[in-house]
Image (cartoon, rainbow, N blue to C red):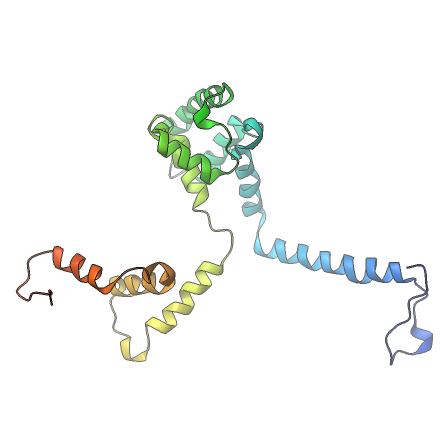
Amino acid sequence: MDDIYIARKGRARHQQDQNNVEHHFRVEIFYVTIDKQMQELYYRFNGKALGLLTLISVLAPYDGYKNFDADKICNLAEEYYPSDFTPQEQIHLRYQLQHFLCEARGGDPNLTNISTLQELCQRLAETGKSDVYFLLDRLIRLVLTLPVSTATTEITFSGMKIMKTRLRNKMEDKFLVDSLVIYIEREISKSFSIESIIDDFKSLKDRRVLFDV
């Protein structure tokens, strides 16, 4: 790594930099790559999104809820979800968080050994505590539905071009949405059999034509 780095062929001899191999890989490759990745991250996530992701980290339930900060969580609900929480609910949320922390850090077996927000949301639903801490449960569900990238949106628009063609340009919005759901979630829709679809369609209301074969 201390040897002089020899530039690629075709470069003039007087243009060769007198740098060693370590400098080439560290400065000209590694640092450049990190810089491009940082630029891409700043392009993908603006300042508001980065602030939201930072505040979401205070909801992490791992390691005995050490990162759980009631003040920052209330700020999260107030700043980013003002339409989902009324002013009275924002005040009530603080009291719910205080009671929740006392119960979680007090050794409640239903709230221990949890490392992700998804597990916490499932545990609250399974134990019925989602009714007790309904504001906290609402906030967690809002955070879990936050898209982390535009990949899903891009897939949706690609599917729209496939579903709504020139010959089907008069398709109504509801039918288009239903068709896109089936196309996007095709891995799930493959598990449905034709017989089950016919049975569900037949059970909607009585029809003149019988679907049974």
